[in-house]
Image 1 (cartoon, one colour):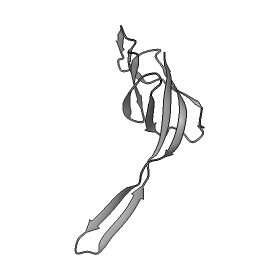
Image 2 (tube, helix red, strand yellow):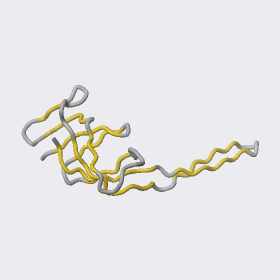
Image 3 (tube, helix red, strand yellow):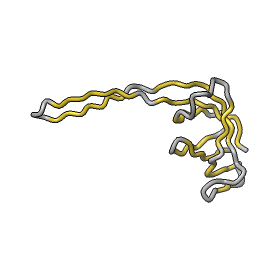
Image 4 (cartoon, helix red, strand yellow):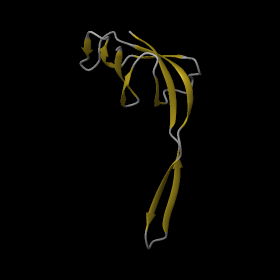
Length: 105
């Protein structure tokens, strides 16, 4: 089993070739089908040998293609204080990117 652990958007993901993951939005100028290279690789396992980075594995990269961009479901945030007529309601939709891992190098 060939896999790696990458870091992007302040989070860590275990990825394998052919796998789709949903990550935090990277930038506005990326379009569907664009190639993305993740160089923050924390661990690489090629089936027989495991390389653990300190904190990253030197020279290791993970290549992926952008499949979809969008915004997640709405999260409603309510601030309320009783007896003082204070009520605020805000909504938030977090942007995301769906990428498909193509290769681990």
